Length: 286
Image (cartoon, rainbow, N blue to C red; front, top):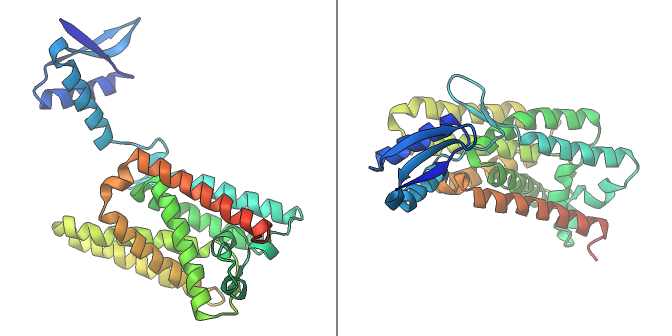
């Protein structure tokens, strides 16, 4: 007696077949016009075969927005486009007459009075179109790379927290500090990438030159982009350091970044945190 396990494509059937054979489960690839591709296994082995396939899919999770962009197999997560669209939506609301800056811009004095949500809401506001374009274009690239390494939902939440960390640094250094913009989050994404390179060194000693080179490149990019004259250098530094810390924590738990449940939960947390902080901002914290 045999059982049939349906697959979406010939490639998937072949991948599953190799996984099952590696566990000592004999299988035959099957195809029919009515049922499509599938695998035939012994009825007595069907439960174990399903367990092996589930484990295989968990360990080889592929996010649909990730694509290889270089021969070195560097991944890029186009989910960062959604973040850019979100920034654009807030800028459109600002230009349409909504008083978002007064309610959500970073104001250290207001934060000291208890308006903590400004640490988050200021990330979504920009002074003009040029300011938005600079953060959106650089953020699209750095955040896309960070999401591919850290997980779409987990990386997005970590970058938001790093951006808030940049605003916390500004608040601690200068109690009259006022600012807005997503540059702290962008520098946080850069910190996430640099931290991933540093922690990979522990696992890949033979590639230490390349890994340390990647971390050094991240530091140099921060100096070039985050310490430009006329920019909010304190927030940039705070965002970069926050990204390094969060990236190091995520590097210690690689399974978390690959877990679909964790990424869904983190993505929901990002959405809820954004909605909550703006709700508090627009109602004046009452």
